[in-house]
Image (tube, rainbow, N blue to C red; front, side, top):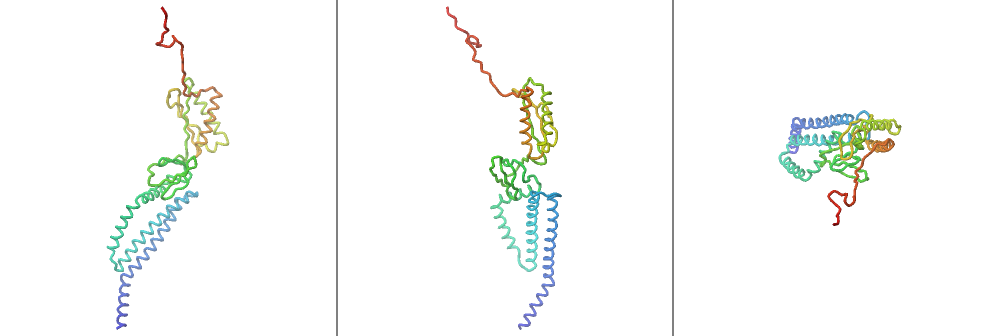
Length: 295
């Protein structure tokens, strides 16, 4: 009796191995092949994002992106393969799928802000709109980017305060150091000044600044003179700008403003400022007031 039972068990195992067992083995081999292919694809993707001369920031960005994609791909491949294996074994997946659906729904409601942060952070990294070292303005906060993570962005402002901004609330990014920068000058001069002469002086000042060995490497192009921009109450506004390497526009702008002030003083070019003249007058000289005369 025992031998007959063992024989039936062996026959069933052989029958299962010849049908479902082969499919389970193929599913396992397919999972391993997909994981290997995914690994190779992510290696190529990482080299693509790092570029020919990867910087530490580019390496961190590539690591974050590839790790996220790797984890998502692994979970998807293993989950689908496991369900296929369970189906071949004969386990009913309907209760499991129903429970997973309810659990996923509850988790989605509880962690929707976290999911939003992660998805937004993934696309921020993918599009390379923000990099470590950039000076940006997001969510009403501006500063130097110290770290870009999948969920948050860390900024340090001019006073040294650190701001941690969740990626989910970033709806607009102002990047002031992407590729190159401009410093825009709005120079106000008196109405009596010859604007052509003033513009020529500004061009000369910028040329001297660009020729200075201390600043020449930070200035990319000569001064771009945009011309007379507008007429204010007490000044004619001349607009021009200098193209600089990223993050150096403020340093160049401060030095240019210093030289403009010294040059304008030396050449007698007036920089107007708001002022008010008060006239006290004398009795009988103020309009509408007349001296009293006796009879």
